[in-house]
Image (cartoon, rainbow, N blue to C red; front, side, top):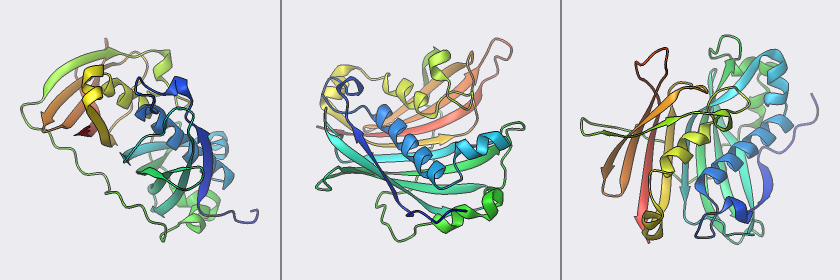
Length: 257
């Protein structure tokens, strides 16, 4: 293998106006995709990304994602996303993110994620440490701070209500052939209207991915509200099987502006 790179990767981005909402701030869904891009850049540069994995019938899939933001980049802001691997086991690895202004004068927020490596033929977990004799372990960074809490277990009770059913199409599908991880978040954020967003700021998102869904599946979104916190359950169903299967649980925490 080549000489080791730095454990922390830093990638520069621009808050382009067509990725911002009516408040002229970057949309949370787009920020989530940029975090996943940063993770992809970091892993590919270091020899265990999907450009290496796909030819050997393996890939990374996101298991958990938490994003907590103090502020969002405004239109035309130049900012960077730092990312690093905090720890790894046989089947899962944890990766953190920091969103900071390009000149390092402002920290917008942080992210935490958990990933699994799967066999693309069987869709079953595979041994992360078997890749390049455990190369990923050489890139573990335990000393860099990520001050936000890890994802919690999203709890729902009997009062949860079905609020929307969504069909899935071409634009929902990613390179792994299943519904894109961030599309679930975007569909949920569409449950709230502009008046709500004028008076509320999305502070924290937690997403737990339970199972895959694919183009043609219907996504059934269930919602439960508790004092500006929204617990969400998403199930899938289709024409061949109308029995619902849970695919995602999510928690949104808003603060009033």
